[in-house]
Length: 186
Image 1 (cartoon, rainbow, N blue to C red):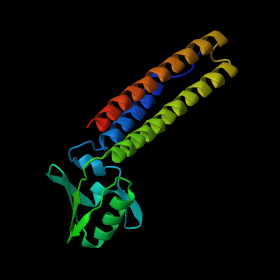
Image 2 (cartoon, rainbow, N blue to C red; image 1 turned 180 degrees about the vertical axis):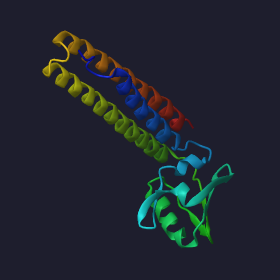
Image 3 (cartoon, rainbow, N blue to C red; image 1 turned 60 degrees about the horizontal axis):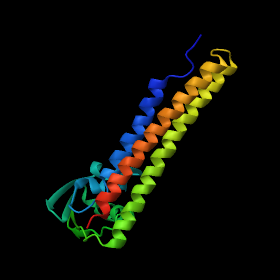
Image 4 (cartoon, one colour; image 1 turned 90 degrees about the vertical axis):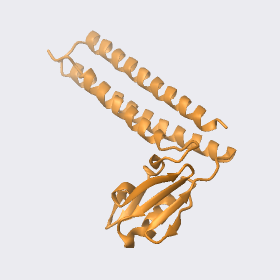
């Protein structure tokens, strides 16, 4: 008899969704400039979409300024456009092969907008966790239908999968609440 579903594999996949969420919210700026702010930016380069860090170098020369040094001069316009279209509220100033990006003071409206983006990231992560749960439940139903496990074992494992899902989703909610508090602080 099989054990039904690999709980460790499901946990690993759920933890991956949490790690992706942590990475996403780390890129949301709060007060001080951070090169991570530009992590979600992808640039249309050489016929495909590439992360900004594969076509340019991002530095923080001052607390409220980012500097982007584009490696290929022909890509400056595409990088400028990608940063403007990334919905981060940033307006780069092109200076030859470099872009200077002053970070505006966070006003109440911008803070609310950043909190909304954090909520979107959280929802995306929760959906990923629920997909993992669904996959696990489908595997359990199939194993029970094929006679690999009994109904009682299937029910017990599905309760464990649900408990694991609830724990991971509450972890995402906790991280979101922390980030929201950080964003909304004046």
